[in-house]
Length: 439
Image 1 (tube, rainbow, N blue to C red):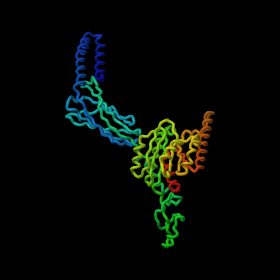
Image 2: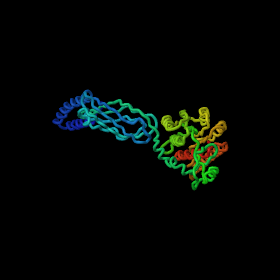
Image 3: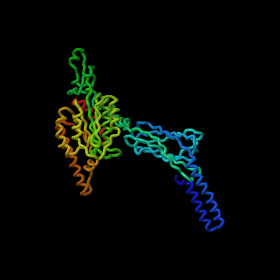
């Protein structure tokens, strides 16, 4: 137990009375008698709080699955035990995880609802601030004594566990234009190129259709212009390789670059599964995780359950080793998308494995550029140091462009993007590859 506010106030008043008694003998007697009467009250008040208060039974209702950044309602239910006195004052603090945010604690509870052994319902709002597993260990209650001379802190175990996932609804809304209207943005009728298109149907010619799509034999038989419709080939395979090491462990705005890359992977997986492709994922760097290829809604659920708590860390990561690992796991032609932040030295290390990939697979190297490098390269220098920084930044960016040209000359695909644009850029590139027939 700890001294309460009432005890401090009573002690302060008694000391003030003692200071006044120094100048008056009458007040001295009053000070002495007050002390004698106050001491038993303090002891009795403490004994009631310590020995006679009953306990409170508590339960917590909270959804098992939460969305990152989406407010969540938590309900606590309290019931007084049949034995003991009901506390005269109750202060509550729920021990929510560090990965969640909340304001308003500690907060007092209204004991009227607990009288006659009723149930007190208390609700508050939490906001998940980080992905991953979370756990409530319990809550703390502070009981006040009848005269407020003492307060007693009590821990009540009340375990709740769950998971915080990326808010997929917000991700889809943020890229809604790309997911809903992308076909209108890139043309209505795809052309057959390579093995990437499958014949769908014959139909009458409409204004705006390509002349190359006309089926002349069907046109001659029916006596009207008939065109051949194609659709993207189904059941192709997409593999995401995501760097969780130091290369993407850089904060830009509210999130790390890695978090933006993970959101882009989830969005593109959703788009690929909608188009009938199978999706696989591999992480490297801080932690290696492998999700085998899957199709349909279950594949997206499996991807969320596999990657929802994956986080980056400032540890070394090797794109070369990740590609070696990927080649040992995929056994059919695959569209491999490797997301990292590439360095000039990666050109030499990857040169040993790129020919092997080019023979059987299509590789897209996605580079998340540093915001600081671009800002330094185009900043107007004010002194010699800033001039040197701008020169170094421009040299760094030019060396990166030379690396891209080397990879593209080898038949690979490259994409440089930012944390804010990676989702839409990836979806557009995927759809262009699908339409080109390169898969």
